[in-house]
Amino acid sequence: MVSTFVARGAAAYDHYMGRWSRRLAPLFLDFSGAAAGERVLDVGCGTGSLSLALVERATVEAIEAIDFEADFVAALREKIGDTPIAARQGDACSLPFADASFDRALSLLVLHFVSDAQQAAREMRRVVRPGGVVAACVWDTYGGMPSQRMFWDTVVAIEPSAAARRAATMFRPATQPGDLPDLFDRAGLTDIRETVLTIRMDFADFEDYWQPLMTGQGNLAQFVGGLAEATRARVVEAVREAFLCGRPDGPRSFASVAWAARGVVPG
Figure 1: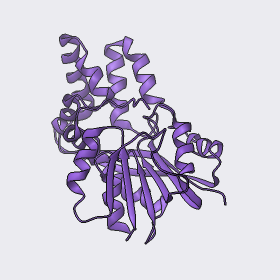
Figure 2 (figure 1 turned 60 degrees about the vertical axis):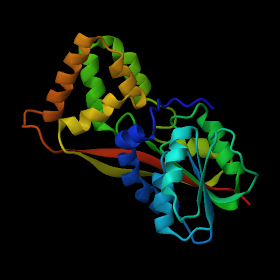
Figure 3 (figure 1 turned 180 degrees about the horizontal axis):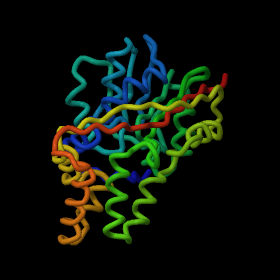
Figure 4 (figure 1 turned 135 degrees about the horizontal axis):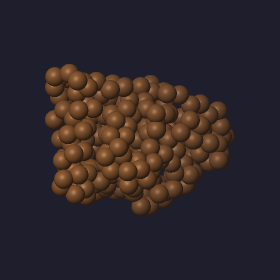
């Protein structure tokens, strides 16, 4: 697998995206389900938001957590403590587990970053027993992430050549209505359901919104870092004005929407 997420270390990930996934994980588990005694696979575990939320939710037998980024796996291992979590580096498109190894395979905010989301869905189905559950969640990147849409629309107004980059970011694989159910249907799952999950992300001020973008984490940060200095200064000021919206700097809150789907492995 080739990941399309630009990673710059576990600490930067936690600062930039970890605070979002920690809020979304409990809602996703409400939808995906979890039961005592199960063996669960966390595909694309990052630094552990979903796995750690899961052990607080249910007395599972085991959680196998895998991620493409070795730094993320190492960070999760430092958090595991006395839990049934085992973390390893792995490929979502070629899972290192035998057929029917798990009761449930879950993936939080990952399938829109893998090189082949359909293959990843097939692999999740393969490693889950008949009657078990496969579930995934991805951001609604076009209409459900106003904090990022604000950034890209502002940038394109200043630098029209960024339009193609905006389109690629807004229309990632598996992020439109019906995309996840379609992946699951083609992977051979049944009893497929789709829902919308909504959180709010709070920022203390503009610096709290902007600074994570300066860490080099994610595709957005990679783009900002590549701008000419003068253009970058204009972008920073324009995005700041959009964030403040005519009010003094201070707390702001944005709704953030994700699509989630679950299906059952046929018997």
